[in-house]
Image (cartoon, rainbow, N blue to C red; front, side, top):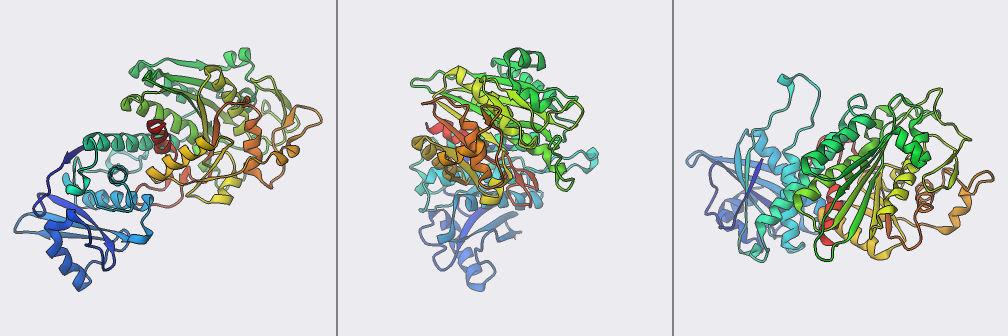
Length: 494
């Protein structure tokens, strides 16, 4: 899909279609310079109640004399406007365009003083791209969803003249959305199509195409290095584990080094501590963290991010067999620390432990891991907010700010030192897990054991947000690609 930019104020709807956004209420036309050409038409519609501007309300109007469409999309009450709502409205616009089988359209960036103009443009573009994407499936080609939409031109009135390089803003937002879509596709792949070896090969192919350094540790190299956490989780499967290290050199003035670590359990049965059958099919998305990191690495290259970025993806399949690791086992991690296994279904923290240890060899300024780690975080925060753990306040604020800008929600959760008592072991350096209370905090505290003092590290628990359990304009049910655009915004703003 081609995204274009036009800075001229259009005199009325143009062929074949123009999309405009309206808020709800008596002030829906106030301070909206981009609506000047449509004011009379919109006033009549509002007066008759044909359109109210309710959130995600739509009204396509066809003008046969001019052979064009005017499509109205509601933003809802101005007071309730949020970045996710602006993005969903942008997604709704392209869904309407697709339903009308249109090939191209003009979309007016709404003037919303509540947000910076650049943010409004990014959210609208991001949403428009996400809304145009249908979920990939394995049906026969004849049953595949089709999308005729090929060209979107974004335009604005004078109020957006303050945006520096609007074409660059649009391009960046589109690339971020493309990366999120790629992460969704990866995480939606069935486990028989994406195992650790297959995902490692994808990373190698991407590195070859982009000419980036890549290293893959197979089971022999993992054994030689002493990566006991990753080996333990993967040993119950016939599909061996892998550790992928993908490097983007960066090199701009004042460049930072950022290590991104993504949990990559390509299927999680729970191991010997077997999960219930209900919902197990969704465990193919337990590699959503690794999918996010791989997709971010490609976008980092396309966006020419000035910083050096290291993408680390520990990949394993957690399966029950006569070779599987057991509760009561004691393993030695890459850090040299020993861990007493309590629950084989708390496997993500084990593979992350080795990857976090490895990440510190690159002496990064920041380490951020992203993982579908604990059901406890999902229970605490639901499906639209991820947990954020860090002792570094500036890093916390930077991630929160990045999430706010792109419409992804995070909530800081505490790393309470008092809870570390629960991880004490009589037989090893510490236990892998404690009881159910405070499960998300316990998991984060476990990970912190592998972070050296004075290393700036943050942990994103996306267990609740990695899947969409309901359809929305910005995406179908399934993998969400959550975290991708936040990480990219973070890398663009540090």
